[in-house]
Image 1 (tube, one colour):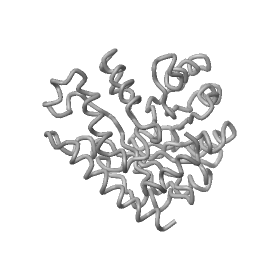
Image 2 (cartoon, rainbow, N blue to C red):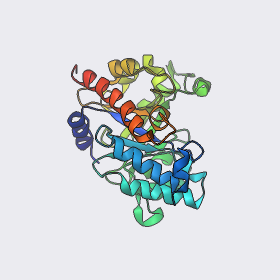
Image 3 (cartoon, helix red, strand yellow):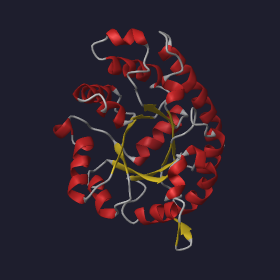
Image 4 (cartoon, rainbow, N blue to C red):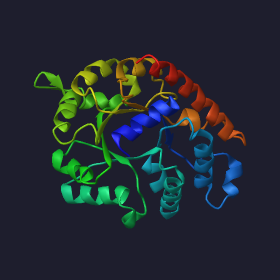
Length: 273
């Protein structure tokens, strides 16, 4: 998916909502456990309920890998089911030496390899440019680079001072040498919203993937105020607050209600840019 296509989806749907498909088989409604593939049955219902208000879906790969081959099959079916007009993110946080990163990129981008065809993958930048570039070699695919995350331990490294700037700022600045905003996004946690103004000074055009709104307590108002650009420029992720809004047979309906609340708020912020 191109930058322009993603931008078009945002303004067409009046939404920059990304639904995180962090599907834990231990948390899905019990009536689905009789299905041949309970995880896919759950994901399918969530997608059906939210596809008209979501512009992206983000499966967290760990939730599928933890199920072994069965989980991988659920992931394959989920990605095949998501409409191609909706952006897909493999939340895998990969990053290794070049030849290993090349295989990771092949895993998520080449359907003839592992049966998956994501639009993007999250990548850890710690090992530097040669661990990231293999992901950028696929036309039409995106790297979403970890920059400033919302977990408590993010300060251990990301906020350390390096040459009069913090490490996350160095990462964002350096990464823009590797790719332009047509292929490169950054992860910025919603609980770090006060830093978005600084980040926008370094990366004014790049899309930002912002997790942490909802169950983690991030403010959509603050994220939108400091992160939105004339092109949209944001994908705001909500996972648990949508997926597990109900544990009963009405789980999909309740998930849609939660997604609609976020979409309506997003529409007001888009109207103001």
